[in-house]
Image: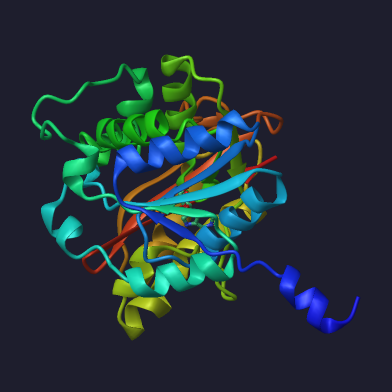
Amino acid sequence: MGWKGLSSLLILSLMIIAKKPDFLSKYLSSKREFGTSINLVPTMGALHEGHLTLIRKAREDSGLVVCSIFVNPTQFNDPKDFQKYPKTIEKDIDLLEEADTDLLFLPEAADIYPNGVSNLETYDLGDLEKIFEGEFRPGHFQGVCQVMRRILDLVKPDELFMGQKDYQQCMVIKKLIQIMNAPIHFVAVPTVRESDGLAMSSRNLRLDKDGRKNAVAISQSLNYIKKNIKPGDLTSIRRQAKELLEEKDLKVDYVELADANNLKIVKSWDGEQKLVALIAAFQGEVRLIDNAVIG
Ligand code: AMP
């Protein structure tokens, strides 16, 4: 077959943008009827290489790749953080098309919360809600569960791809899937970093030049813990890691070491238990989180 014959066979694969839940549900159930599986990557937009790595991971499996972009008001405990959350939707659409995404779900708040936000369901997340992000951002994980419940109900994915960068969030969503008793396979994708080690985050866009330089202390501090941790009492390694952050003018919410499986704080380490080191700190007004698994 010559080039002419070939070109008549080429089909342009265009990304569908679904704004309305009805259209989304109908479109996806028509695909499901033909046995197509659905791989979901939920995001809040301002996409970067971390998000695109999730999309590529979802693309590796057969099936439809669906990405959602929705900046969920109910998960922001700080209204200023919500207002200032970066929005780059045109660029996001280009990036998703380049990454061969099949469908972008781009709802408005009224599509996600048709009855408003004042009487939303709450979820029993146990201790997960009282520690780390749960403690410093009251209500945050309820908001995360409320939006994820709605999106999962609409998309009904077979596989859900989320980033280990938000370690505690991964655990919360696994718990939500259990509560929903939904047949969703959860895939946690390792954190993607800038060349100097800073974990990629949409919030990095809000850092000024000096703030961006200082923020690298977060991953440096995690690396310090990884290199220097020894069995026994963990108080001094935590203190040293905190000092590394404070030397760079970061205001620390927490530097903590916890059991990687259940996030219970570990004060003294036997050298065997799998740990996760977790950091949350402010660079100016911008709150950043990161973590590293140890062992
Ligand atoms: P967000 O848009 O910040 O809500 O993030 C959407 C998804 O991308 C979440 O599952 C995040 O954990 C994940 N994600 C964000 N940053 C990174 C990163 N640097 N590496 C890997 N995954 C990430």
